[in-house]
Length: 306
Image 1 (cartoon, one colour):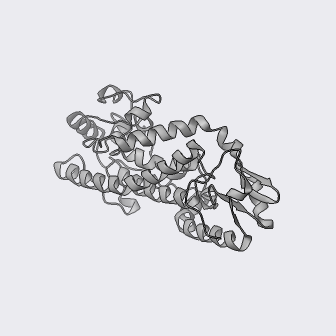
Image 2 (spheres, one colour):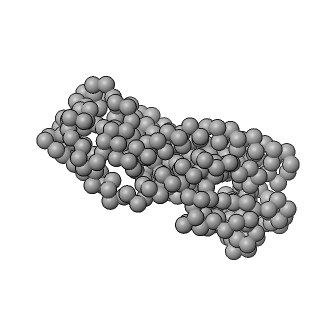
């Protein structure tokens, strides 16, 4: 059966007649195709974990965002669908599903229990999309997290700093800190906190987020996963890919030496490096804007119960 447009009703009054029923020979190939797309993105993470190895760039997407590779590889159709067949019952072991008249479908009670989180997410995404970008932070949040620390004191102790602690501090002091993202700001060193132009808080996050922020781009993945399985897996995967690009840019502009990961540093401590970063930041915003709009539209439809 043809897939409907996004935004089918998901309220407790949704009837089976409003759903598109996917037979097992329809949805199983989609689930396998999704897993095939995800596998190349997670196999290095799985191999590293078995060997006890670390990658400060890629591991962030699985540790800071605590969604396992297997969860990313698990396909969900999203709202408006019901699944049939013996394999469909496997979904009943996952949260967010129920069985009605032999059909496996999303459980609106799962979403209702998360209504406050959904409303907050919509406010954050809507506010971010409607605000002018903040240009000029130069990704110094990672610098603020290492400000006046030695190599043995930083988060990624196994990853060498490419500048001395004095050089890092001098760069921060010269350029200044203009971070707007609470989940970056909360990792600032105590000495760096009073240097920031503002004091981001969790309560004020819907009013602080802006589209120039790399962390705001990465967080689309978090917000999509928060509302999975109601958000379809193709959208979650698109947000993951975008987050991976943002994280790479984040670490390239950091004071860490990322050359062991095959990445060229962006030396934001120099004028040329700051220009390079600003160009990359604009490209990141251009990639992220349509994805943010798509996710916002999906979550707004869920919030309305359309």
